[in-house]
Image 1: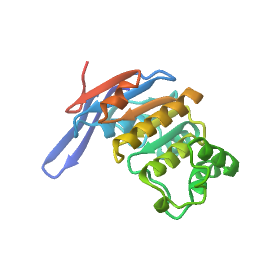
Image 2 (image 1 turned 90 degrees about the horizontal axis):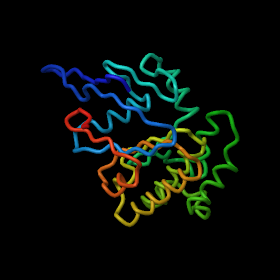
Image 3 (image 1 turned 60 degrees about the vertical axis):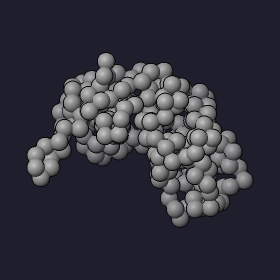
Length: 215
């Protein structure tokens, strides 16, 4: 990122969410984005991932200038190089665990069943392949989400509060799983978190305060 700002229009004027953000994240690095609620963490993650566009400045993702790309180009880049893990899991409710994990591969025109089965076994859900999300605990749903995120072997993984809806013990297990999967693949990981323990496991922390990156 170079000189990135994000401003949104409100009825009573403009609200600046991010201002003057410049940063670099190296391939294979694990980075935590931390800060108080409302500091702009999720907005920063969305801009880094190309889910949103900056009001000003430049954002480069996997060598591509996504600030100058249209939505189709950004979506193609995300499908090719990026995985996501969200706080609320975002699983397809009418699809089994197996089908949820296979989905991103099938959207790329690949057969995903065998890879999805292997990933679910890797995350400890080999006996839950055909369960729907509502039949799984929160921790199990997040395991499915992590397996889905790694299904396409992404070079970059973005995670937004991946342990935020989980109790401490389950959150610890999800952290271990997330970093264990990363170790096996040397994926670049960018995670938004309030959890200082999770942040401490990253290579470095980017701390936001009122939309600005602290030195």
